[in-house]
Image (cartoon, rainbow, N blue to C red; front, side):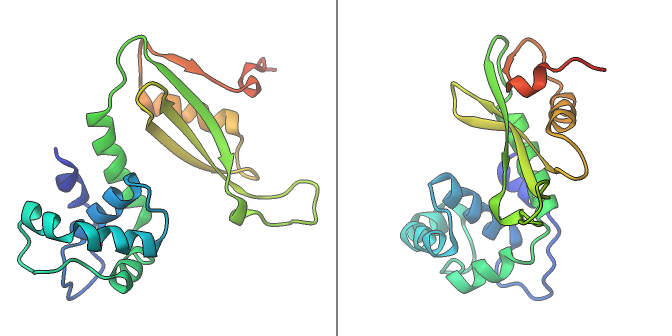
Length: 179
């Protein structure tokens, strides 16, 4: 399936859309892959690429969504469904070859920290598996440190990926013996 076909599986929450939801999601993916990390840079990307995208995508409208439309849609989109659609496409397109090196790592998301004044803070982390040679992520899981550990999250991620014959590099944290 193409990326567009995967994005079309994300349920549209709007009642009278001007653009199909997949168009907005595709623009977000393309803009993000081009280094746009905010709404304004994303809107600038869409504006710059508009003539070519309208031709390639064969859309009935003569313009693409504006900054306010992009923002309005992205704050309400079902992020879990969007993520699953993208991950399904990425798994199909970027399956690691035997012998390839993958790096796994967890990173805390700063804005998710609560209990700043406590020695054991609660926060959300993202654990990913990354194809080193191609610079492409092949798996991603989120976790709350009060609910689970990075070790369990990585184990779950590797189980979901079902990869054989690849070489994983992991933090020293993952060398602990079971007790």
